[in-house]
Image (cartoon, rainbow, N blue to C red):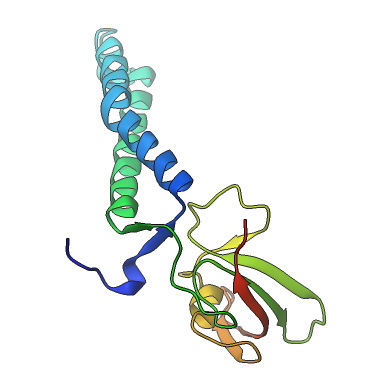
Length: 165
């Protein structure tokens, strides 16, 4: 097994890995068969230029193939288990508390893959602008990142602890 660069690694819980693997197995097996049957049934209806069912089935097929590629990429770069973590240092798998510049309210979230749905707190991707800016920072550090409108935002890291579930 070859090692990939650390920024390409997606850390997943066993539950999330199993869920994504089951989705991939379904889409690449029975899912493909079902959509092929829908396309064939629509094709038998006649003129394909004005056949809405055919075009809808072909569009659905494209979405399924896209999701299959996405899942393959995630699972190919996935590591199951706990990401290496150091208390007080922001990284994937950490519960992070920050304050935004000009706002006294504290915001707490889990820095993890977006595929980790179901966490009882908000999940921010390490690849998001905020996640990338704070990754590797320590408690007390400040980080600045670009907002979609072109402005920048600065956050101060108040806490970074391993996520306990």
